[in-house]
Image 1 (cartoon, protein in one colour):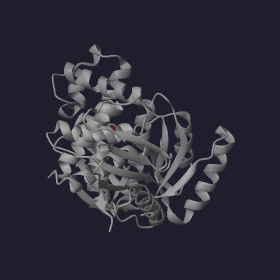
Image 2 (tube, helix red, strand yellow; image 1 turned 180 degrees about the horizontal axis):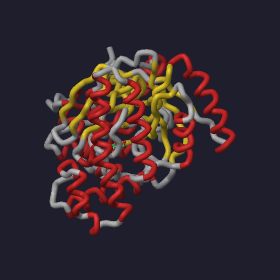
Image 3 (tube, protein in one colour; image 1 turned 60 degrees about the vertical axis):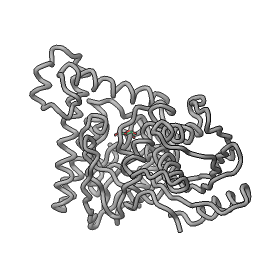
Length: 382
Ligand code: GLA
């Protein structure tokens, strides 16, 4: 938790609005394994991290609400009576979306003021958007006594993302950010929205993110595209989601789908198997197997589901070639962002230094390295 940032945001709120705010921290997330499986009602294995969004929020007596994004130094006035999405890409959509979806849920939100900022690099695939949505719904729930459960809150955050941001995301990011538990990853069943916590002992290893610092522009459209491929194939198979089929079921309709789309559906089924094996590996303290599954996952994301990119593939290939890295893969929606790496702690520095140098030589971009701690979910800061 970033104490300096907390202080900066609280001070800014008091200067602007002359009253003491409620302070909330909502974390970003990593995902050990289970990419793009969430919207197929399958399993994922994410965890909250100790970076995220800090929100200062309080009720307002004015007849408008004000939101201030400290990192961008931008203010947005919100009239809670008439909420529509703003132009694509505006940060205010996350906030407006949450307020609108709370209203659609039949609850009343009165006027409020808020200031927020964060320490998750944007576009890193660490779910700064889910963290922001969760912080807002969590804060409004407390201030206006809305009586929402954590599960209701994450469903509201997800709807905000669908209807105001335009990404038909699954539930993983919002869930991990809200329900995270320190030192644990959550094996989440995305159909029942229930999880089992797995305490992870990383032994002599550590989880490290390497941010490619690229985000290719097709991210959102390709994401919705992949989702629709999965839905079309589920329809052909006459099931609700790919969760409901086996590889054999899929084989039966092979003639009726393109080879590319067949591979995409196959990837989902195989990735789900990997998630379950990964959870078992963690329970059995078998980090070698966990690492192997990460590499396999990347292989599927790169060649079957086709959501990786050259920069990320390069980072993973460097990890593959290093004997001290047990596993690595792209993380999140794809087309940029971070790789997640399981590295022998005492060799982390030498590996990341070497990779950073090669990456710079090849792409003329600096990558950034973050060692990760698994942390608690959204909470009030004292
Ligand atoms: C994004 C979405 C999640 C999930 C991942 C891919 O982060 O928000 O719901 O689908 O991509 O696993």
